[in-house]
Length: 114
Length: 113
Image (cartoon, rainbow over all chains, first blue to last red; front, side):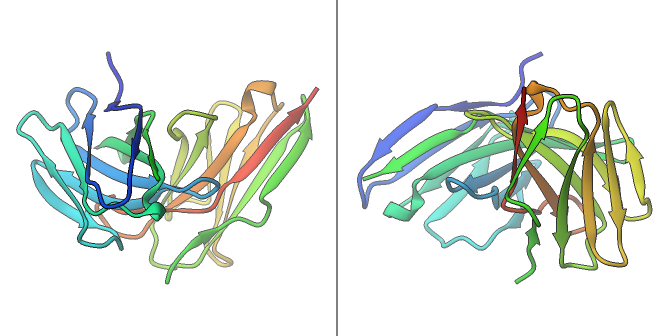
């Protein structure tokens, strides 16, 4: 059974451009979350989607947006890129099972903004 | 704002010894915690979780201890192996439905031969 997949693996963009990152959750998982991980720090929560609806939003500017599709895959969009947006973007799919929150992360997309 | 932090940014242990990684949290309303392991170039991997109505939970070679009085969480790894070398994060659930996990800055565990 495939785990969480993300594409692309690496991406280089210039300031002002926009970017779309993609995520496919584990089969059967209806919830997808996005995290930003700056080098040397822990992941920071950006969004969570469940059944195509936004269920949570972290402290990120409106340049960040996301959506979830009927097949539960998700896209994260970032507009007007800044140098500070350079980071590893992690997608996690999750579900509650027997009292535990099974949250599995993908390998991430490494975004470099120049 | 609320945050999860770690006492030690780096930890070096001899292979075969036990490791203890600590974490302090500040939100007394948090009711669920997860420890993650992140190896270089990979996403965080679930190790073990604990709910706030428990003070100890054991897994395979790992034990998580929760002290709500002092808002402290620890991860104990028994008989540390080279494959345990990684960065370890504790994550705190602030909301009831698991949407928003706050991660600490991480502790790098290095296992010495």
